[in-house]
Length: 457
Image: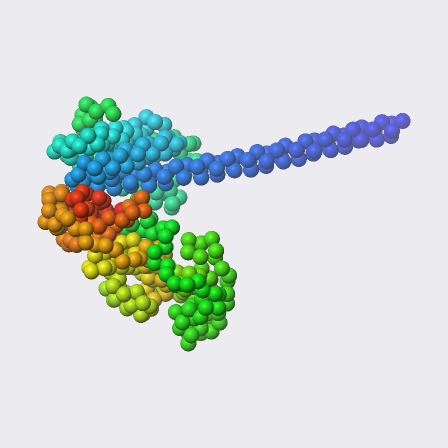
């Protein structure tokens, strides 16, 4: 009997041990599951905050750009458009600022600044719409706002770098408080914002493709001339374009029917075992795209030499009268935008991109979408306003460096013949476009010169 009791006791203990083990396993599994879910939630939150922050950076940059443009706009029509865009961008910047895990009082001045930019630009846009010119006081206030926007933009760019290098994370901010972050972002002095508040107490209320590249496509495809090509004909054109002596092997990749320009695609291997991709349009057999992959380790060719090499290449391929406009340099390769010219008038819709290697000047790529969509002979006789009359529409502070005629596209898929004036205001470069028929200011672009290229916004 004693042995039986002892056996029962051991059985109970063993059963309890099993139960305890099972419970521990269940707790451990739940813990792992909860940790995994919490980690996923933290990652999702981090991604959401990152998205909001980078959107904020973009919109603040746009605010600075539109404030700069508003300073030299000299017509009520374009001024109203610029100020309306400024109002929209400032509102969007406020929206994304509010999504960050920061108490509103910690960024009170930043919120106040964006709110004042929004209200003030809206107020001024109403003046422009009713054909009222901005006063000297208005321009002074815009200039002051612009200087603060530059400071805020620089601060956010530094924070962006800190975020990318891991110096802080949103998770740390939500745990440790927001004071340090707020001090970094809100480093524009309270005194500056106090001055702004006094100024506005009476009011209640941008691979880079160069200027005008967002209007490269059209339904008509004016430059896409000629008869339809069969695949073998297109293959012959691809071989001739690259050079038959350069080709080791060529293979067909099929037909891109739903592309902007329907084209046959080919893959070529040259004798150096480098890969070259090329597309030839079905209609007319035009080369739409060619790209050769090659590593460039040194930069020997200057930008001027690269421009010349690219232009010579275009002439050899039948593209005459092209003018280099903007460029971007990356990893030893410069991508240059060339615009067609007609009687010295620059045709900005007719753009071709050319990639030039800076080690030996070799052309590694070409893209002709803009040219094939838009190139045609234009009527450039409708010049009613003289160049001297057009200058009268310019901001008096613009120091003109160059001038000429150009055709620019509009967002409504039309084109306007304009005088193009390039100049500076306080060491910042601008392009101003004055309509050659009525003297109206049509557009203003800011030129940004960087070590890697010349860009426009």
